[in-house]
Length: 570
Image (tube, rainbow, N blue to C red; front, top):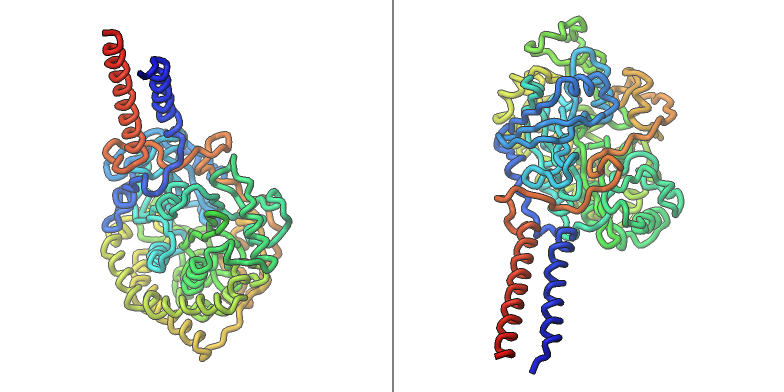
């Protein structure tokens, strides 16, 4: 006969399991299969322009517009496609775009970041915690970033969800933006099998990935975004040692993914990146000591940030920008260029960009000063893979026909909004020129792909314009005034050979608050709260099923004990 104490022992064990399921399970991180990423379709619907209505106190709006460089976060309510989310964090964002617009007298067209979980760590919009609204600064086509992410995704690289959005603030039209998903723990869970690794945003000292020491504190520009309290960051030190000291790269790097990234970046001549003087606009993600690279920020792709660190610009001498235009005349189809040095026409097609070197694919720096790229291209096998990816891009993706199909599709959707936009930096006509014609993205693709194939065959040999240009951060540069800012032209030669000013660095860019609370602490694992209808195979559903099952077992145990005791004492 089973002793009574054993029965109560089993009962106690079941009670402990039940209690543990309630307390412990919600604290566990979610795998990609546990989360429903409904926001990809419900927020970033690329078949239309999404309406984003932002409401905040007028005093808060005045505060952020009067001192935008402070990037102060204010509380707002955001309505997207009729779905309203209250108590969200809102701030302006950007580097060159932020500083440039701040210097303009007739524009408040800043980029913005919406932080849905800033005040409530469990709040999100269909799983999305952060949304970037990019103002298409320095891009007359308004399509460079959109097209770039298309090609990046087609190359099988992790790419943030994105779509066009028309923004209003307190009922006033703010214009057409590109909405872009934040690279954070949610993005990682959606794109990687293991979502528990270290995510870095390189920006500043150490972002070139050159060896400094084996102390991670000597790399303040390698900003850790996840596992802030728990990671010893030894994987990063091992990674840096391998690429700088001739170690086994394949043990620390997802080689083929990195090669696809650098091939795509090179084909797109995207030099406001690791391959350019600013050595930023990318993320690194570590899984089991192996690092992947994540693309970011492509409004200056297609040669917008040119060879040698200068921007490819050419002023149409026949067009004069009216510097006395009335700032209040927001309905006029005249771009906001005052104090920006923005010319009447962007020189999209130019020899420096079209024939950007594929053998030494850096600008304003040297391969030796970009050890990750240098380590990969120094291995004959990896260089062959890199060249094979370039050939694939030139033949199948960066073609006139393919890019034309994308630009025409985009134009059909956003042209009415471009025409309506009261704050746009460029005219509607300049936008149309980017869709097709001799100064368009398809024409750039046709000429760039031809150059890539000619360089691969040896028919064309291009010497890289390294220039040794190593500026400080953008905030420091902007202190020198609009004439010396990046990305506007730094010399008289539109790119290679341009004379470079002497930069002395400047204060390091502040860490973005995204992913952290007011105390600088990370706000936790992916998943969080989702609306009830979105809990399909979500962590919430799994948790509830576990609690229900545990409850059923507990009730069953109580019934069993009760019946057993009745039979015993009959």
